[in-house]
Image: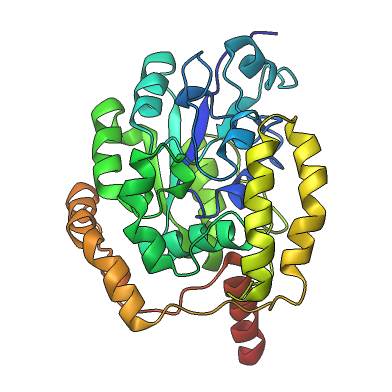
Length: 328
């Protein structure tokens, strides 16, 4: 059996349904998805990952698959007639990753799911806040500290605003790959029209149309309000994450789970919506980049410029089912 890098990549964006798409594609008999999702191999190029310094970053660094032989091992179960793929949603954002993939697999096909950059940033912040790692209870304040955090060596997952600058990322991607090798999808379509999106991906990859029962929903955590619990348990989790860098990832997960459960105790299933004022502040830096994306793709992203409630993958799926039921 030949050992070769993947034939296709799900390159982004974080918090845009990549995990769900990965799980759905893994059900197709002609496709083989890596046993480890987000190996991040092309972000470091056969060198240990950078010593990122944000809360929990050192622990996460231990999970990177940066040695080439270990990376190729992830595809050992693939049949000779299967296309091999992997999903690391940071590749779209990471300039060196795009370059390394182009050098190693210039014929690879790349799939990116783009989500409204403000909704994406909010979901990203929410993920880290509810895990007790984000120290700022207000996303606007967290974004204002983004440049400082980047300068201090915090990992890409903390780059809430920068990761949503798709225009500049796609422009560079098109500099490295022919456009016919790149498929840009929209998160909203993945949620609202999953069957059509999957068929589009299957056609792009050159495999047979396959009926997938359902795209798995994204992970859902209870919302943690800013208060005594968050201000008491959160710092303990962040301090523990600093110690956790000296432990294997699986050990830290076991140790931290009771703390995270305590943080989530009494949490709400619903998540607060961004106010129009918050959205305006968060959207303003993206306007020029959205215009660039429209110029590159010839498509309109006008909806991203409007105020919407947003919502998680699962909540939007539920809303869609409610609409369908009401119409029956």
